[in-house]
Amino acid sequence: MHINRKHICMKEHKCSQCDYKSATTTELKIHMNSKHLGIKNYKCSHCHYAAYHKSVLMKHLNSVHLKIKNFKCSYCDYQGSRRSLVTQHEKNVHLLIKDFKCNQCDYRTNTKSALTTHINAKHLGIKSHKCSHCDYAAYHKSALTDHLNSVHLNIKNFKCSYCDYQGSRRSLLTRHVKSVHLLIKDHKCSHCDYQTTENSALKIHMNSQHLGIKNHKCSHCHYAAYNKSALTQHLKRVHLNIKSFKCSYCDYQGSRRSIVTRHVKSTHLLIKD
Image (cartoon, rainbow, N blue to C red):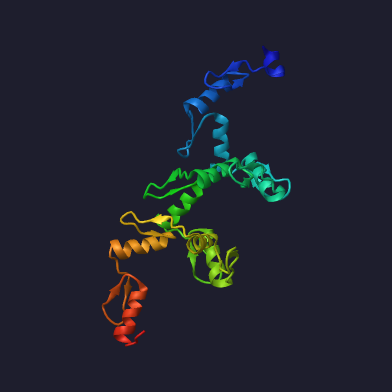
C-alpha cells in the first residue's frame, strides 16, 4: 500500500456523489465536506471565517490577520500572502495574460472569479451581493462595499488634489477630476459628435438619442426613462409631489428648476418669453 500511495499515486478512494478520486481517505473526506456537505470545521479565532480544512485556515490567518507575504513577484517588488495572488499579479501586470474567455462574447480576463462576475452581470443579471440596510444588490462584493461606504457609512477616503472634493470611490474621484479639472471627454459616440467623460453617460446617450431604449420604468404609471435620475425626478415631481426648488424672492417652490426659473422671470423680473 505504501508503494501504491506514495510512488504510483493510485487513487483508490472514490466519491459516491461525483467522479472525484483520491489516494487517501483524508483527502476524500475533505472533498466530501467541502463539495457536497458544506461542512467547515476549521474556524478562525479572530473573526467569523471558517474553512473546510486546516491549510486553508492557515492561509487566511497569514494573509488577513498576520499580514504575512511570503510570495514575491519575479518581475517587481510586489509581495502577496498567497501564491495565487502573485500569479494573478504577474499575469495581469507583467505578462498581460487573459486565459479565461467568456463563451457568450469576446470578454477575456486573467481570473476565473472575474469571468464569473462578468457572466453574472452581463449575461445572467444575477446580483448575489445584497445590502443588509436597504434593497441594493450588486454583482460583486467590491461594489457592495462601495455602496455601504458611500450611502450608509458616508466614508469618503478619496480626495481631489485640485479642490476640496472628496469621494467615496476612486472612480468617482477620477470622474470628478476628468470632468471638472482636466475636461477630458474620452468616450465618443460612434453615431454623432457627442463626447463625455464616462462610459455610463455615453450608454445613456446611445439609448436615448439613437436607440430609443427606456429601461427605467415607473412602478406607479406607464412612464419610462432613459436613466435612473430622470425616473427619480419623475417620482418626486408626479407621485411624491416633492418640490425641491425654491424661489429666492418669495416662498414659491417648484418640482423642477425650470418651473422656478419661469416663475422668477414672469413674477419678479417681469420677463416675458
